[in-house]
Image 1 (tube, rainbow, N blue to C red):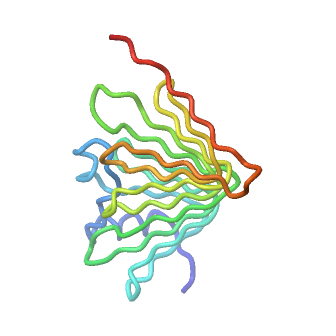
Image 2 (image 1 turned 90 degrees about the vertical axis):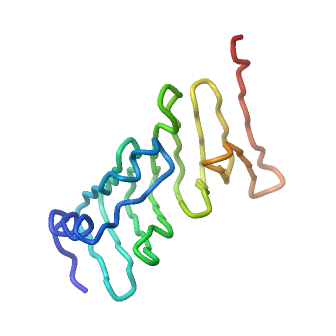
Amino acid sequence: MKPFKMKTLSSLLVAFGLCTMAHALPEDSAEPIKITSDTGGYDHQINEGFYDGNVVMVQGTLEIHADHAQFKMVNDELEEVIAKGNLIKIKYLPEANKPWVFGEGERLEYYPKKNLLVLSQRAKLTQEDDVVEANRIEYDTVNKKVRALSDKKSDRVFFEIKPKGK
């Protein structure tokens, strides 16, 4: 399959209703997924999209920047997003009047049906003054639970949790 321009792909995505990406603001899931990149494509037979070069995926308040990204659809619903790059960046607003969540790493995996965001390799997750750094961070986007893992015995995970004012 030959790559084609993102304008065409974005139109196809909207036309086929591929518009549920993340558990950011509840209204974000009704927004279309907008993707720009240097090259990209969508294979309707296997329901997968792929993008290379300066990839930016946006849906409402959710924004992902990566060198390479792909996604898979199952029954017209987003099953997974996998992004790779020198340093992938993600940001989203989980709830109105709550602080933004920022993440980064060399690899991002997002599984919306499982409410799971995984950042790995130089991974960092920040919300307001709270910070987690590790080789791998698993984040439950609904229950707001974080699990940090190192990949070697010599590596350590880092948490900085600031007390909240009363």
